[in-house]
Amino acid sequence: MTPQAVMDQEAARIRAERMSETWDLVRGNIEQTQAAQKKQADKHRREPDFHVGDMVYLSLQSHQTGRPNKKLDYQQAGAFSH
Image 1 (tube, rainbow, N blue to C red):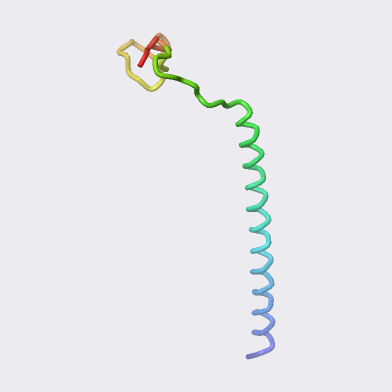
Image 2 (cartoon, helix red, strand yellow):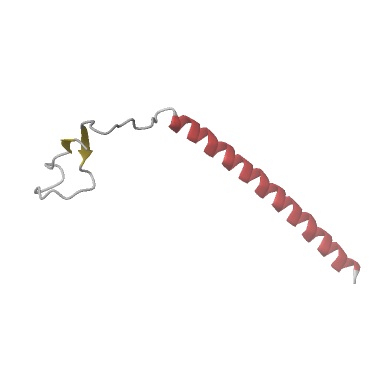
């Protein structure tokens, strides 16, 4: 193997190691950011606490109701009980 080929292999190995380190750093930053975003979002969330017999409203956002357009459509239907 020529000295130039050995140098090229060494440069490629060093570059691959730096790229791997960079990817590890980026992956860690993404995971840290996602955890922070989840923590913020979870502050505004709560588990639904419905029980059998509770009266609830149903959001009609994803249901067709036959109204002329969505703006004039009913927003909720209810109160329903199970």
